[in-house]
Image (cartoon, rainbow, N blue to C red; front, side):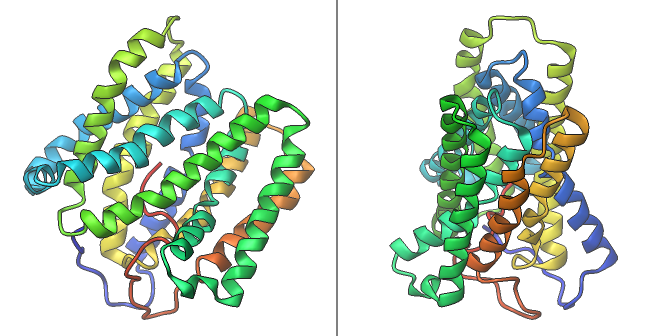
Length: 315
């Protein structure tokens, strides 16, 4: 999408660190909110409220920026982006969290760099096959196996839910290719607002048909926080972070998100910290860092494709 003005400093400014910390939390808490929201809201209801509400909140900013008209000219790709980045993943996450813990969900979503690297290889990027990155892939998927086998406890429902979250990670790894190839020349807020609005409209009738109980106060509060904090505000804050520290370093906080998700799940929801999660978590994160090519060096240029890097869009 359109390139923001990037700070030339090789160090994070105070503002950069504040935004970095803010995003590490904002994108680590959605799994907690989703887990609480689906207690009395159907997955479709959660998606409809989250996307439709966020679109309405972002619309004034998109209009002021003049970002909607350029995005409308590329509406087929905006809809493709909406389907792959939002429509599919959001409902899969909500459905999966009816079964598995928020911390486990956050960790499995963090495997995006692993699948992104595989996709890069399939697209002919032989640089993704460098020895260290290959080791990272092996480590990352080994860590996922440790977590999955240890967390499922033989329950088929748990395995299905974890498969749903890994499918989300695959979709999240595909979406940046659409951004990089088809939507890179339009202001980011335009496609994001239109995509959220389209998904909200599509899911509204499904939500009405699947919502069979009166939502609890807790579910309403949590879906509201998911909409405002983790979707609308998250986009605005992330664009500010990119402008402050650059597109290479901005997504690095995604490695912190699973830690936030796991800690909040334990402290607030009382989710257990299993041995498999304790062992597999660091293996997955180290594998993701290595598979993504390690942390960017100072002064490194932004990659042409975002695929090997952590996915740069809010969840």
